[in-house]
Image (cartoon, rainbow, N blue to C red):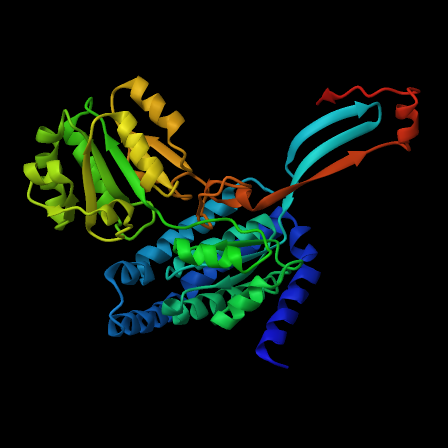
Length: 429
């Protein structure tokens, strides 16, 4: 049997048996999550050793510093993963949550309840800690998962999956619901598994997300470029605004929620730009500025490409704008609908920004780096969706749920209602 057929059979078996997971109790799923947590701590040295192999290979291949930064899985990343698992465990059971309840008639009660999507196909980039997040969210939400990580993290991913599967052997759920795939051929097979895979979540470039959408009939939850912008209004505290911009750019520059473009109101450009540059110089951030910016601080002259660039590094594009309206227009033209922020004391401008910027996350007076499932209290996330269908923004447990209607009756028939023998009451409960 060839590798394509083997993978197809694995996914079909997963689909066939998924009810064992989707119908399990919250207590059973939480116990399994705790086993995974304990296993990661138990196997951490093996995981770190595998990660070092990936880091060595990445450096030998001259991969960029943002990729190497994402690739690292150290004690800090482990602690973050463990904390995320604990947060997911502490969340309310998402399965069977009653979202609506309505009395259609006496002894005829309708409920709309949450229910797992089924089986999810997840293709993610070089971050091995994303694997732990994805597995934990799928387990909590009762979904099966087929995972494909970046080739850069192949050793770390294998070590993580080995630890997870070993831990799950102590759970009645076992590990049938987790499948790790590794090759491009496996991805192509995954894309053809409509009827067995309910949702695809690709994390990567716009071109990669487009490839997935164009080559599969399976619904796709978009997660692509993070071209995030900050507009600095004229009514700001200069020092605090500079610090927010600094954090948004440098706290973790390779993250998709790091700011890439800073738009500055013309009325504060002369005073704000030197202060901002002083902050950015602490991390040697390369600045690409428009003509006005270049006349006020030392920087590289920006090109049109800079306004559409996701640097993912210590690099940022800065432009001076007339007002909040011009900032909104710039974001509409160049943004990626991910995360954008306004720094301002003007409530009218803040509300205009909130109502006009069509992004998954729109902030005021805080860092774009807050766009994160863990920071939102979701415990973890499978990604930040820029799609408007199903889920948007950081996608946690609830974003992996669908719904079903449950109707409890007492031998009623529609004929009685169509002939007016009975009438609907439609009372919200």
